[in-house]
Image (cartoon, rainbow, N blue to C red):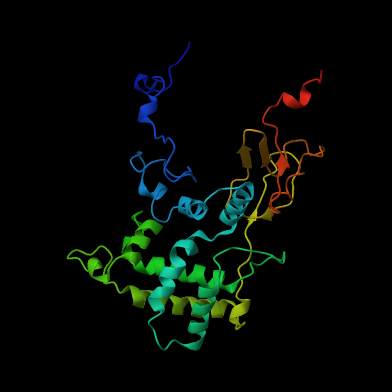
Length: 301
């Protein structure tokens, strides 16, 4: 006897009309970009999936700086996206600006602020050790987490303490925040930014046991591959990108395509293709990709 699962009202009703779906024809900006965000402002979703600090803005900013987009540009944008510290991209300059008016800072706090300000906001590991290269990353992360906890502390546990809200608060006019009914409590953004930086420096100084600030380095994050019942492979450096990457260039004369999928395309641990893409991936290399799966098997006349 067959049993029905689910309600009839949830049955497939056919395809939605094209005009009801988000679409764009010859967009004025010349590009369409997406990084797991909702496709249009009116699409049913929450701001948590798209807001002023959503990571898609980083890609849009990279594309907006180009008059034409080349193959090498796509490789560079992918690499930049993989290494950028997105919280820093949206908040570093904001936080630094909040303490710039402080004329007299303790020496260590001033040095910490300078290291954050001089950091390029990328998570790099050029020497191949187990630590990221720049102490600015370490200091910023601690500082940012403390600022967020302090500014949005009244909202902790409500689900409303998002990065988007924090961005709106930090970019607002101070007077706009002094409403009759305050959901944030008494707030002085400059003071909160400074106190959070001082707390970050104190905590990091203790955890680094008196090391100079230039040695306050963060351990690298890694991608760990699950064995899934097959042979295991070594981990690789974590990057903020999909494990499957593909670049395609269409032209009238030729079509070029590459992709990468670590650790490999074959689940057999004895196959040479079991993990042959694992090291290509962290080195930002790709392999050729056939768009026509029959082309390689066609017999020449």
